[in-house]
Image (tube, rainbow, N blue to C red; front, top):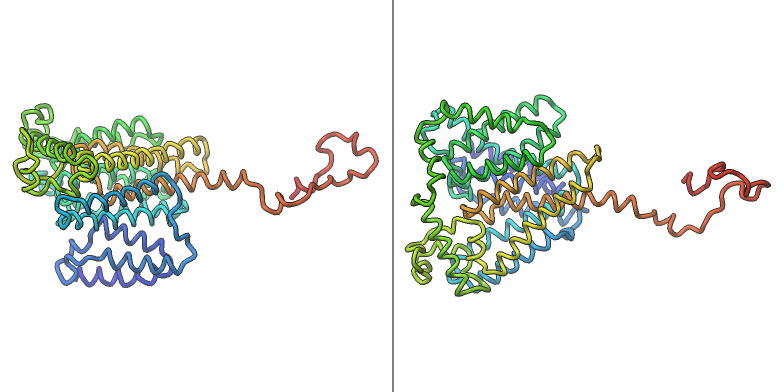
Length: 455
């Protein structure tokens, strides 16, 4: 039954995608982040829907009047450069046949991000992108939060199988990134009912994060909370929700949750943390011997690679890099990590420029709010990502692309206003009305209307 409902929904939206490619972008994001095929158990189970949604979007895009080339912005430039360099490092990878699978997925994500930067060129479209991200990830937030409340937090909350957020730690970090976006939608919503619903979703998201038992997600949540306190001008609702959650924790989760979280203070004695350090050492040894190209995508996952690049205290068997920074460094060398860091800096610069351009502008308050909340999301992701292999996460790259679209959209009205109309620039100087009448030169300034001023 679920398969038929999902198939009917996709068939229903297909004509809309061909007619309006930005709807295809929203559908593409929804399928990518939600992975609805993982939630059904029939003929669509495991079916790769992204390709067909992307194909329909591409056809609709080619037939539309929307621009066909991504706008020039530092984020779009570094996305393209990173994709090119990742292709080179995959060709030179320690095991190209293994790395090319992840390259294929990453390039598709980069194409999606560039499409977002190109087509999300208005307030309505940007808001719709944030809404679809909220709906897609919010599904797992509500589902996970409800699971925690019903089971008393005795079991871990996990994401959909065979996705980038399957692991409890990865899901926790994705939900940390989600909360500020939900708050932006709450603040900019005109409906009290919608605002209340978003507030409830934020509460369930916090509960779901707790239910992941992820210490990294908890640290990321704390970092984003500090960033929110510094950046937000939209009230204390998220902080109040966090306070309520902290007070309610003893009744929500068992003592085993507190036991696990308490190990944060003794991380140097924790075997899980030691495994992460070992993975970082392996990445460093790979890049020491291959500084330009690294080992290729997820090279530390391979047993023979960890044995070939073994040093005291490093991995003895294949394991994920467990850090977005060491992940990119080990995968693509020093050039790759430089491009990745420049991409992050470019996205932050976009949000900072939007905040400067919209300060005190009531008409662009939505853009100001979005820029602030994206910064909070980035802080949480970058802190939590220090111990997780999520450098190429779809949701995060889409969010970086939104910063490019936002910066361009905010800058465009100012450029238009400062640029004189073509007919005015080409017109000869016009004499004021009445200039030939007696006494004109002695008339006070502004006494007569000028034709140019009236136009």
